Length: 299
Image 1 (spheres, rainbow, N blue to C red):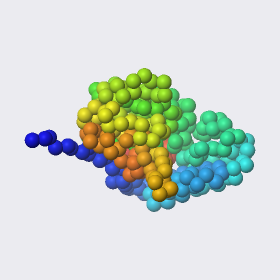
Image 2: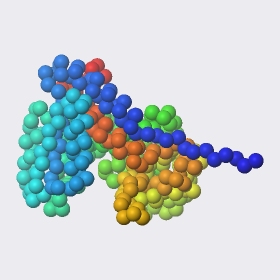
Image 3: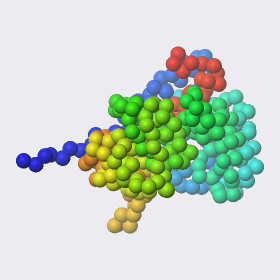
Image 4: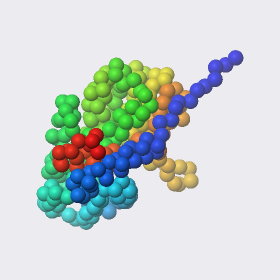
């Protein structure tokens, strides 16, 4: 009698993100009662990138649904670096703005790092300012990048035993890989960060209890690379062509093979991506509370 194949548990982002958004929304009336206004998030969009336009529109809808103030500043692609820095300086000085998010990518003539560094760290809801990155690395209270924060919440929701686990983060970007590693270290995992120069990536995967794939390569991580029962968090969002000339979304993990080996896995789409905006709302409320001297847990 042959053993029956078992499929991994799906870690679906939709219900977890909805729960997080509801938790944020439930605290807004308490903030309003204390401050006389709702927390405010301003998103700055430079240029006409279609994907960025969709992201910004969705962020606005969800921010308003949560009871917060959502503002959008749309600038032409020809906006100079000095002009964008001026917009950031104005938002830094605006007491009604608790969170500032400059949508990436920016046009090539603008130094992205200079813009990140210009944002008030207390309003840096993307968690990318060197002050927030440094505080996170030292295990201090910081505004944490939304995607890795969402990944940690997903691990928590499925009851993953992170402490003592061998965790592999594939990718070392400031947006996901590095902060993800810092969060896992903070949760007492033993963490390896892999990248383009890592040797024997399949071997590293095989030793990992938790794999976070954030490398930006479609379906790179194969099921045969994985340890049986591993938890797989797929951060990748890649468009690949279909036979009919259209495209489809896939992650950095080859889902069909991985689902036969992993213990739990996030789908793409429908996984981590949904958590990012929910965590942005959480970061905005956190930033507003810290700026106002309010304990978010007391709301």
